[in-house]
Length: 252
Length: 267
Image (cartoon, rainbow over all chains, first blue to last red; front, side, top):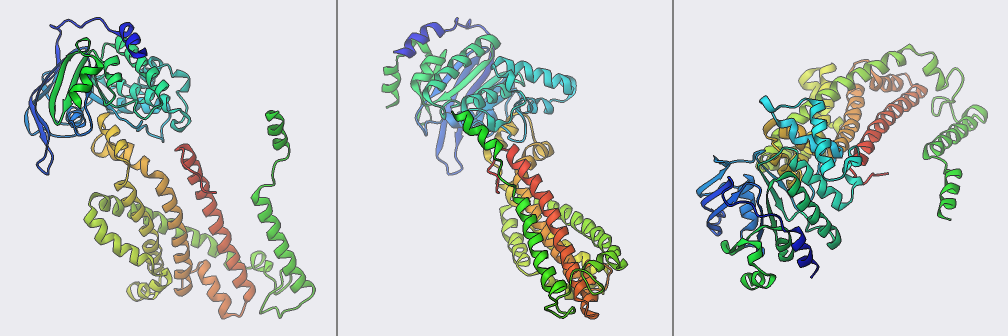
């Protein structure tokens, strides 16, 4: 009930269909070394600025899809293009936020956000001050600037995930990948962070791929939905076309 | 109400452990003084008094060999332990790459580690002679193993989520090692460095005792040869003090790191 209410408010303006394609999958598939198929050949297009939610039960292939997109798994057939370039390994163009916060405990909050920037070389290389300023700017986006010098263990679960998102955003990726980022949080924190993520999306215009097994969350956050089942697409389309019942029926 | 309890606690600060340690030391020395210097219950060459011609204190005030030996040994442990740490790190990194290698070599290292260091001294003397090389051999042998084992296992066991986080943010190769894998292993490593230190220190004393290099270990041998139990006891005191000082420095470093990492701090 609440989620439908919020959803109407949160529904973003539709992204024009002719906007640039950021991510393109052509017949991409993946098989485990055992030979079991994790992901059947999949076609998928994500346009710049889209917010796509990928849902599905465990074993549906959604984690496999995410690992392929993050560059941690190598697809065995088809083609995967990010901004027109073949995606073959982890890259700053697509950054991943994991389920568990995975922040570096030996760095401060700010230091964590600066981490990725230290690996930017060449023309885009930032010096120490620039890195710090950039990190502060991103930290401000998630509303944690006063926590800049804190240690990771001093933060709450929700704050840690905010920092994780900020850390991934600091590199200004083409595609932000989120792997059930709020699933370890309590319901009210989860809802709050969901709202903040939408806000962040509107502010930054980032292309977001959000994996979750929580259908409510997917319907609430996503602009597009991709439902996977046993490695195949079960449902795909703009969120407003589907109700919770549709998704539940399809995934049962 | 809670604040009152808190502030009361601040006023009545519990006496620190080190104060009690100090009290214990003085009580012990006091009893010793009474038994030997005052009551003269034992012959001086069995249990020496604290003061006087045959006392322990004179070994510090009037024995040049003591003050020559201490820096010699410190020098040796610095070089030996330093080398052991570097060597241990290299071996540890190599072992961290393959589980098979860790199984084969790691097993041998654990086996060697279980042999008391002094058991290797005769072999070292046969190989290198009665000289410093033999001492370095046992110190390095004993010191590098805990470091190698700790580095290999902690590098191999860095949480996959930290590794993934590092890689997704652009770290790879050496950068991944320096900025993710090593820092993630650091808490385990500090413990290993402390263990390694105490192994190396024991090995040094054993090595010096059985070879003929000037050093703290050799003072024990001199003391035995000259029936000078005061020198032997004074030397034991030096060995213990240096060991404890180094151990507490490293322990406080370890505690700081564990606290920063948000890990449990061992008391």
